[in-house]
Image 1: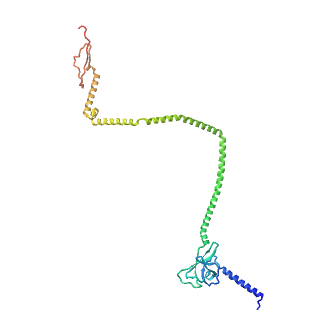
Image 2: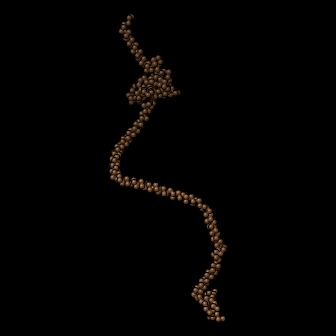
Length: 333
């Protein structure tokens, strides 16, 4: 039987298409030489998971996502069918964790097998879980930063507004300063002669102070010499002599208080003090009577005669003194 050219071309096209299909499936990870098992998991949100995304255990690819269906009767949840290797033991309670696959934003499913649990039959459902991926972490860390940036921007806007007001005030201040500088320049120009005279007086005062300093130096030198001479005085010996004198005076006063010596007896003996007072009073009366009646005590006679009359005795005197002046000798005798 002779095959026509058209049939050969058709068979070649079919074979090519089959090879293209199976090659594409093989590149996606499908193994046509080994049997697989299928498991299902339900997610609320798959975050961009697509068919043919890998399924891994501890980094090893053990399968792929076979298909994704929408469950409209369950609130639009997503049913994901996983195709896993037949030699892999999947137990009940195994988790299918949806996670990021690298930095390119792809998705993968990580299996966490529950050890010691019964085996899960083909077509069973896995426990859905999600892992905080890089994008979620970036979003979580970025949102507070963005909030702070917004607050900082608001504060900067307020500060800039205050700077605008400050700029207006600063311009006014600079204008006032310029006016003050102009007025100061005018004042200096008007009082230039007075300022020159003042500076001349200040120079004269400086010269006078220099001369005064020259005159004060000898005085200060003499003062230093006087201070040195004061330090050279034997002040300790002088103070020792003064202390000895004070000790002697204290001893003398102690003797007087204890009745030793003439002054002590006079100060402590009351009878002696009374006799001295009486003697002084009698002497005072005697002197008074002598001044008033001198004839009672002194007799003057040119002829050597004595008064035969009985002299009056003083009333209160105890001592009588008579002074007679002899007459000159008679030449006829």
